[in-house]
Image 1 (tube, rainbow, N blue to C red):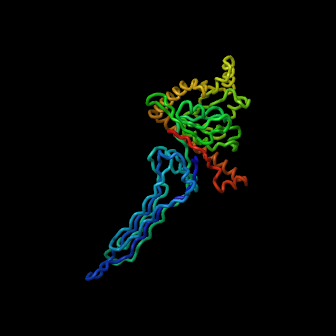
Image 2: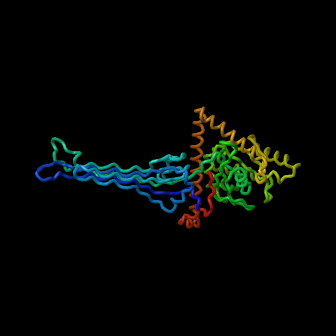
Length: 397
């Protein structure tokens, strides 16, 4: 299955039906008077969040959608039928953007939430509506209004409580495999993860949270290096980030330089996202000799000027992961309680979310524009193959 998190679509609501010009004509009833009915309203286009969907792939192959037109009115004061609304299902977490104005029309973050993206045209009036004591045989009608037409861009951002960031092969996929039922691909080469993965972490009975693993970053990702920053937008909905650092990289690079590179890319992508609560997770501790572990960790923490929580784990051996997950759950509970009881904190969170979404859109649009300036990339864009990945989607909410 292809994982598609962006899709342009064109939607058009139905036109309203025209009013009818008609007069009553029956035997032995002369001058029966006007009896033209109104037309029917056009159908609207409505998006509905469906928890059973996890990709926008269907909208990559069909981009034009139109609701049904309203029927015209008829004689004998018969009103035309209303056009059927067109209901389009999208995954939970879909943001709807108007391509023309760039405005965000809505954010579907709850199952069953709906959004009218194009309203149907209003019906026309039949000549019956215009009869009066001074105009007993009106020949006036009105046409139905045209339905709204919009060019939209659908953007999917996965809903998760915790997001993992780090260099390729830092152990993000191994960690999510160790603490959840998700089974993303794991291998000893970079970029084994090509699409985001979700896993539910069960801490105890009725105690769980959702963790998201996105493809690894490298230096220059904000300029399009590697897989770029297109998947970072999925982290804008998370409440906390885990920065995984490989303490003994297989390629011989300096773990401190790697950690600083990730910080720089986060800052370039979204300063607000970079300021999000972030915990440092030093992974692959089992590879370090016991007498060197403390010194290596201290060098990393001091070099990063880190003041937040620090955890030492070995994802492959599941060492230290249970304590990490329990602390994450407790943090999420406290954070949720604060948002429910403190209106100022809730408003600040909503404002932060809005800033992150705006910064993410600006960066991704800028990168897309720069890539389209390259002739070879533009050629590939004709088939839209650059945005699709023929890989299995590991999505286990």
